[in-house]
Length: 206
Ligand code: HEM
Image: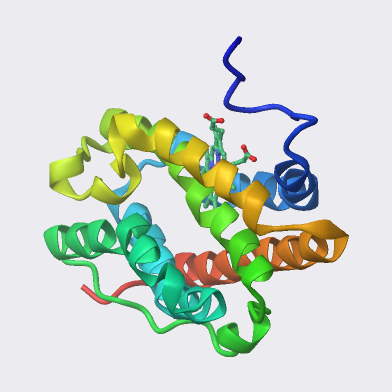
């Protein structure tokens, strides 16, 4: 059987297709906002890390509670927050408070919404591989020196993404489930954008 490409619509993956089309524009906007391709200074990178961290501190418990205790070990094993904490410690980045009203703006009230939200964060590990290379080339930041979050699971990123995509198609059923997942994904992208906008405007105290 031929292997499927990592990206591109698959007729047998309706949930992924729905999530992609619901969030494509948001992903493009976020790529433009973060603009890693032309990142030139370390302080901008540090602010982006602080933006990720303040968002995930609010988002992760909401996802855990929407999925329930049966998924909590699985979630803990996939979380990249420990990498983020390590990077912030290595670079001496101070945490930022999350944007006001973030938790209620994230409508993660059902398991399906949580799966949609997870799509965003799991998917960000794919772009992370490209970003890790840009950080190393542009700023000399490697996994050991403050780039662990984007380096993430390294070579295992692709296989973990495939596992996740299979779960997504099983756990999100029916058109109502898909609609909820799309709301969870869109809210997650919007929450990230707000967190980055604030983090990038904010000058982290030295
Ligand atoms: C400048 C920043 C970013 C760049 C350059 C970027 C780039 C990419 C690339 C190249 C892929 C496809 C990788 C592949 O298929 O092998 C991807 C996928 C993805 N990225 Fe990003 N990304 C960025 C930021 C983000 C952020 C901040 C998020 C979410 C918080 C995110 C969410 C996703 C998702 C959900 C996918 C999976 C799309 C799919 O296959 O359905 N990305 N990104």
